[in-house]
Amino acid sequence: MRRGRRVDPYKVWLSEIMLQQTTVKAVIPFYEKFLARWPTVEALAAADLDDVLAAWAGLGYYSRARNLHKCAQAVVAEHSGRFPRTVAALSALPGIGPYTAAAIAAIAFGEPATPVDGNVERVVSRLFAVRHPLPGAKREIKRLAESLTPQRRAGDFAQAMMDLGATVCSPKRPSCLVCPLQQDCHAHALGIETQLPVKLDRAARPVRFGTAFLALREDGHVLLRKRPEAGLLGGMLEIPSTDWGDDWLPVDQALAAQPVKADWWAVPGVVSHTFTHFRLELMLLRAIVPTDASLTFWASPERCRWVPRHELHAGERLAGYFGTAEQRRLQARVEEEAAWIRATPGACNSGRVIGCDDIALFGWDRIERVLQRDGVIGFRLLPKTEAPALQSWMKAHGYRIDFWEPFIGARDTVLRATARILESPLRPGLKIGPEPASATGATVEAIQRLMSENGVAPYSGSLLAGEIEPAVTVTLVDGAGAVLACAFGHRPHNAHSRFRDFGYGGAVVVAASHRGLGLGRYVNALLASRVLGDLGGTHFYAFVGADNVPSRRMLESCGLAQDAGLAAAMAVAGDRKFTR
Image 1 (cartoon, rainbow, N blue to C red):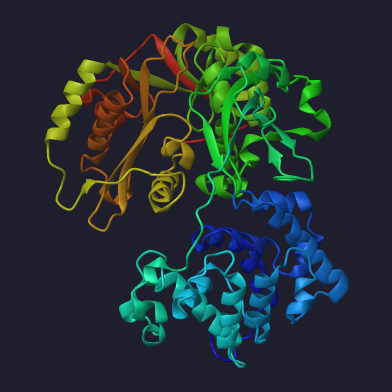
Image 2: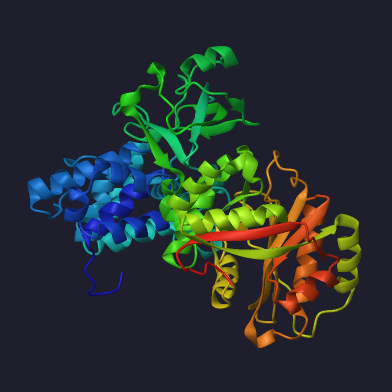
């Protein structure tokens, strides 16, 4: 802390509560999010508890969040919005124990208090060579730590002791050579520093088992249930499940607790989570249900609600969206509907929007519902003979429709053609760049920005990174790592489609500064070879406008040819142009 700088007790309290049983690295984004949303204790006190719990989701130990809210309300109601400065008064507030009270008193107010966390315990037990095992030694260690606390700058001293334990006096390999307390450390003098503090062996955690039900509604909502206020994870939202018992329930017995009557299928694997006193293992059953699905008695309907998928961890996932508000909204829709798209005959993933590859299977009613809700729908590989009827229907219902020409190539033909292109070296200073490792970050944002700046509606970060479904995103970069060209591909058709073994490639974008150098052809060849090689499939296809001669030549050089019997289109409400 810099001299003369006042410390905000609210920020100290918030950080200390969050850091209980949680690492600094994990806490930082939550801490910043809380301060941005509730910058004062008054703002937090006025917040809805459900909003606080939702913002806390991911930090664990959820009783802390409930006590955080209660404490904020108590500070406002009983102390006029000002935290008390003494350990005794702080300890009387909800959720503040001896350590947290001492930390706030010392750091925020400079009181000569002594917070003793695990790091301080380790430093003190080694400094004084305390050989009595924990937890029995806690009182002695606390007394010894208090004997070290100065009357002035107690907050600086407390933070120095914590940092010393975290960075120098580490649990397994303490850095004694650089430790400022080495000459006074009794454990180091005895050569027993790695043996301290002494801890009794813990009993093995018991294991509990259960079955969870992931119900996905056709309109992109997920069924969640609020847990009872009392008990573990009290008041938090959960996917409905059976009771947690000492052994697995047979599936037929578990289904007695299903929240919705449906055709459930098991998701491979087991979900495991370790709580403080036991480990939980859950089998996950999944079902897609209609929008008018009724909840069973066993679901406890009064505690259930349907939540849009994009609202789950919205603060984290929204960072994976990019572009205009409308483009981001549509990216979220594709994520919400991913399971429905995979399960619905005639549906396909058009990347940026929901798509249809078989009107007869998909149905005109669904087409109209998607258009009314989203304002746009894509059509892929439809028989060209259906184009006039589709165009007439769109015109009659007030929608504009634009058509593209599909270019398709068989696997072996495409791989031979792209291999020839990729044999040629890239221009000096250019290289194949990294692929997105997650839905957020510098790489995915650079790709999205390149698309957006060149008139191409960007894909969501989740789609580019293959988090929604298997996908390939390729880039070409310069020596400084700037993305100069990119392309995206995936397998958009579900198991009901006659094109289920077709891979798609699109959004071939080259920065304006590097056009005319053959980068588009190279990056498209790289994409096609990767889609067929990594994702498999019998064919690779792309779309191109009738008047786009350079793109047609690029696709032909990669082994693709126009299929005159098929058509692709996008229908939109009004005169909006969704992408180039």
